[in-house]
Length: 228
Ligand SMILES: CCCCCCN(CO)Cc1c[nH]c2c(N)ncnc12
Image (cartoon, rainbow, N blue to C red; front, side, top):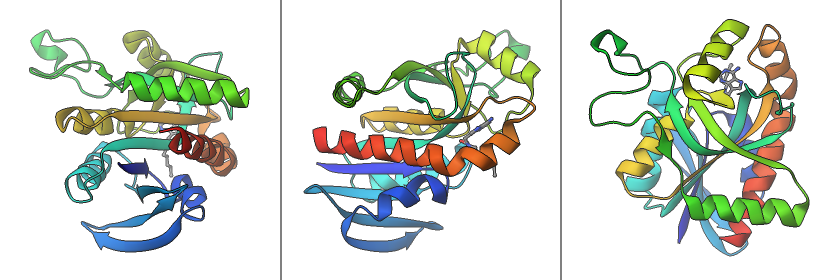
């Protein structure tokens, strides 16, 4: 069992690297991949860089080149649901691409032929997350995460995404990771800690809370690795 742990930014994987034993790193396709052991389990950790294209590339490499059997994503996100406050955790039941649009042909937002609007994540891994959260007394929200190649800092855009996709949070990589895992038949789990509320204050809150929220997400992911 080889576990891929992926983030989009250095800050999202930095809390993980320090916890690994026997770490070796290799450069491949303009990414650095850290291979190591965590609690006796083989893990490969990498950050993709921001956005759906980089994320799809890194997810593919983690699976096809590093032979990972499951993929866990750890990172931060903007809140859509009023329930989600900064630092709160959300796991994706499903993910959609809010900026994928061929509605000119009568298709729904987020849909292309032979694709699906909402890609599901692995039910068993989500169950493990709930067990871990219960043990640790942590509240975990489960919902739809909307992914797009835009940092959303506008209440109108946030509202439209929330209503159009029934989404609870938004970010820039999750759905593309889920599509890659789905296509390669690898269980996928997407965890995000809230860093902002995708509104007028989003960029300031993101800057202020990226590090602390990334740590919350990374800590939870490591607890999950112990249970897998
Ligand atoms: C230098 C700026 C890097 C932004 C990267 C943000 N990540 C992308 O996955 C998560 C995220 C946190 N808040 C967001 C928001 N309001 N809109 C989009 N994405 C996010």
